[in-house]
Image (cartoon, rainbow, N blue to C red; front, side, top):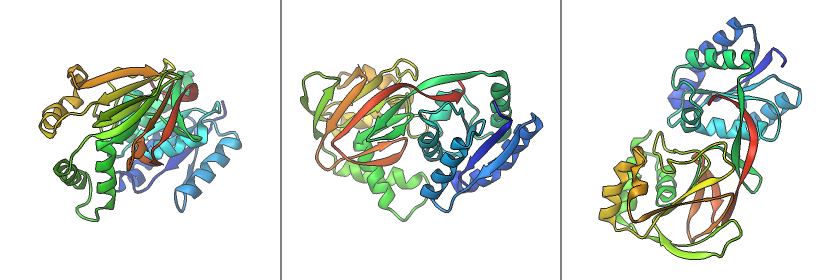
Length: 296
């Protein structure tokens, strides 16, 4: 592996932590003998173009500095190549970094871990989800949770995570289950009323909500969590248990495993790694060993 590696930086991640995180991460990597160059972009499209160019030119690794959105953007550059991906997680959620067992909000420690694993060749191939050519690493969300995202993204005030708490309260006030059509692999399509359907390559989203607690990044299958047609009161009781992953024990929650999942529901947007994919219907495929990573 070449000693030249690329830092892929989102300076706005975590309310500015991305810019501050790049320096200690780069210092740790340089101290380990790597030649580090930095890729920024004028916007997401420009940044991705530059990251893809670095991969095409043979960079030894692409190191994303930011949150889950930056990790997702980096996946678009390295998936399907042999270029390793490292994560310096300083965003709000950091769910992919948690799934890989990497340090969170400690850029110096993350840089050191990445340097050690790259030099020692301690890399793993993991699965990714794919929808219409776009890759994701953690969870494809749809239903109540994606409606909260929709509303939160439209709100100009307040800022930060608090606006999503307010968005959740507003969505609860108008809560109703959604009519879904779901097909797993090549089985028969099922029509169900559900609060949400989450397609998990990884186990968590939203900063540690273990919506698909049994998901395995290396088994070639999604875990599909379906929260059925529960009432508002039931949803409020079950929701806190998502952080421990024990919600799957509730009778209104079902878990399935499949390599391909087709979902449709009117008026619902799909979000993967916290980024909007577009309106349902969507078809998600689990692609085994799609990316080489530092971690696990």
